[in-house]
Image 1 (tube, rainbow over the protein chains, first blue to last red):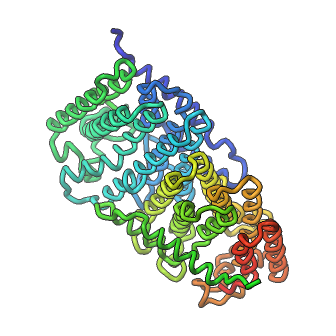
Image 2 (spheres, rainbow over the protein chains, first blue to last red):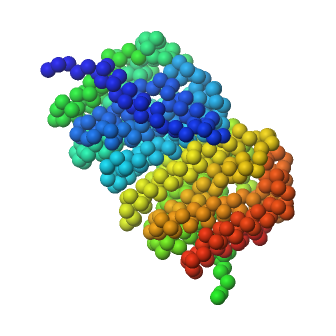
Length: 298
Length: 298
């Protein structure tokens, strides 16, 4: 068996997603164009496109037509981008830089940054809804919308961000940190996979497998992200190592130590691979993504 | 014909809407409960519930089952409430009070206020999507979702708010002020009516009539709102007259004078009534709402 070329796969999928994202908000002409410029600025500020890539990869496992799922994949990146814009605001994490470039409010001002985030979140539902026009049943698209809402609203990402704010500069338990991550990051990752499975035509069993994969992959992603802050390569990371410690963030290495954090990441990667057993070659991209987390350098 | 009792109608409908809104965000238990408290605070800070009432009234004209449309009506109030929370933020209009009570960020802080707005916007799409479970076709619900997105995103409300910010303290033309209002307020009012028509089972002609009614009623609402700031009763308004002028806002009376503003309001009310001709008694609430704008005192 030829080894799966993850780097090539990710780069090709990223290009497909970015081409589709490029067509979003095309009508930047009137007095309202500043908010569109601001939204596009953050949408093209160098993301890995992990959520859309996971969504498409899950649709692939389901044997679906990727073209039809692409608008939903873009919607997930829009939701992710809106959350970054709002999280970076002075009232929230107050970050001036993200991925090596100025944050949205540093370029466009706070008011426009808030509205650009609002616009990305709002329009994400247009892109999700538009999948029905691509030959998918309206009922499945509504199911996808409700999963996106649950994962990004107060029962998911927003809930996680509130917990993060509430726990700032406080000693908290590993259980609380994990609960926070599952909501703040894990929920949307899992939802991306589940939505891909649904819109790709997968059955309930595939949806469940994708959720389980997403849960463990999401935690492995978070743990290895925390580990990178301790021992990562700054040229690959777009942020300075040690910044979590400097901000007094409750990370896995801070709570568990580096060695135990590494073995926890390994366990979650193993569990994520187990969820994919029986899906054959179509699940190879998802397996490669999970395995890669253990050797990532940035 | 017995005269239509608008006051009684509005008060009964408001009660129906508020009972339904009361059941939103019921699971305020975990660490994330602060954002839910914040969302509920603004959701129950004394709104007129105009958007849900218009949505239900349009569904009534279409002969629909109001119970089935109620979640969508609530979603429209959630979108309106989120927009008020974000507009009041220090980076935007920087308002400490709204309707006589402290604004969201004055009570909960800016970070939670931003997230509470985000949560209301996100969850609005759950409530819209949930209408399909009430016996309405998924395709119609998706149509309603796309109308809500268009009216509240950069092509509607958010676009209007950006224009408002861009034009602050500038001399602008009546055409620009009108364009701003049509986007900032009018779009969601019209969408509320159109969504009510769709989910109530109305045909394309009814949808168009509702849009036309909404367009003119929305402008009449804005003009009479501006007029109230010049000559309204402060005890009924929840804000101090003259506050627009003090903020240097470009209002209809400032641009047209009081007398011409009144005749413009009258013309728009007449046009809104014309759009309802032929709909008989079922449209009487909408007619009464439009007529009331010309005699409102708060």
